[in-house]
View (cartoon, rainbow, N blue to C red):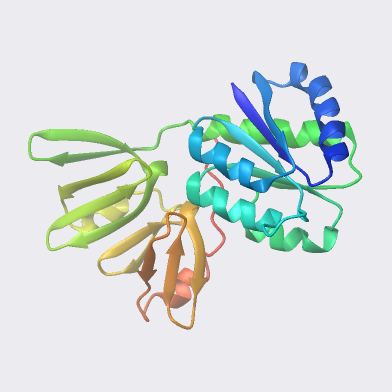
Amino acid sequence: MLRLILCDDNPRHNQIMTHHLQEILPRLPMPAEIALATTDPREVLAYAEQNDGDAVYLLDLELDHELSGLDVCRNLHRLRPTADVIYVSAYAEYAMECFQSHAFDFILKPYTPQRLENALRDAILHIQRSRIVYPLHVTAGSVTRVLNQKEILWLKMDREYVTAIMTSGEFTWRESLTRLMPRLNPDWFIRIHKSCAINRLYIQHLDTKSRELTMKDGSVLTVSRRLIHEVTGVMEPPAAPQA
């Protein structure tokens, strides 16, 4: 079940979108429901913190609150790194900044129901593709595990051991990062240091002056001087490969 979470500081706009969605939901290729419609962005973050599963967050950009839509999106991605956020706003001039916050789509008000339906269909397709497992077989002692590469945020090397920091915890096994890199999806993983590689899907921010890379889980990693230009060139996280 796909959950839709609406947040607009104008209750009337929430009502209008709810009306449109009630007409659209039966036509979507995935069962869906409106889980929350609110004017308070704190309720959106509370929902994300307490609820896992497939969800699309439809956010206004300008909210009558200390948190803007951009703030909510950034906080959402800290809680749920793969959350799909669609901005619904009348401020077209902020569209580029919205996409830089790794939102899935931007719907300009006033919108048509068809535009809203198309955005949701695209989001559902993205969710369905993201379920494809990209396996990485690793062995630690007598334990062999199949890790989903999409769930690996970053990897660190300590002596002859590699640790994968994942959305669901950590796993360590004996292997060099040099031997591991060819086994990883080259569209996602990039080395930022001789002892560290990151998944571009989870990049939050890069400070080129300090060479500090912030990941969506809050980790701050140092990029080597030798690799800073290569990392800067791939700052836009790619989409998951199509099936």
